[in-house]
Length: 199
Image 1 (cartoon, helix red, strand yellow):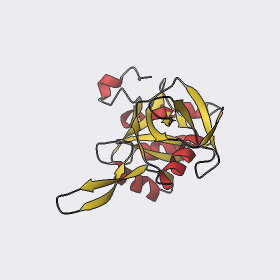
Image 2 (image 1 turned 135 degrees about the vertical axis):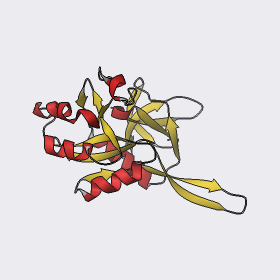
Image 3 (image 1 turned 120 degrees about the horizontal axis):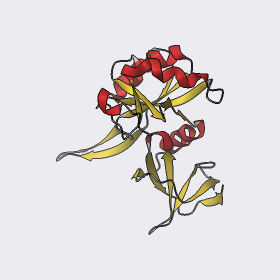
């Protein structure tokens, strides 16, 4: 997954992000017929730059998505609900795969690069973005979960989470793991009482 020259340009090889410094090489993927068009991409950001990068890319006219989760922070005198970044170091942008759009985002202050596989920027399936949005707008309790590839893939039928897809995990209680493949992050929600179907 990592690009060969990762160590030389000082980027996080675990995530497989395409570094902004190598922008001319990033765009070669746009010639592939399978990815030409408008797609969601995972954008890796500098530490604590997620909100700034999201605002800047939005001002450039691109659709953005920064997954936030509401948490209760307790102080000695009060409790306060705080929106925290669900995937620290990442946000999502819906871009045209043409070189100009990619370069524009890569030049944005605070952007480390686009998440890539085998040296090519990897589009995030729109269904994964849709599922994350649905989950977060319903304020369903969830927590970060170890990224999974193995397991049965299921879809929720009925209720406010109808159509949500993920990997069914059997533990103490049934939980559904929603994975974002490109950044290898996942969250888990309890699904007791929901009707499921295999995909």
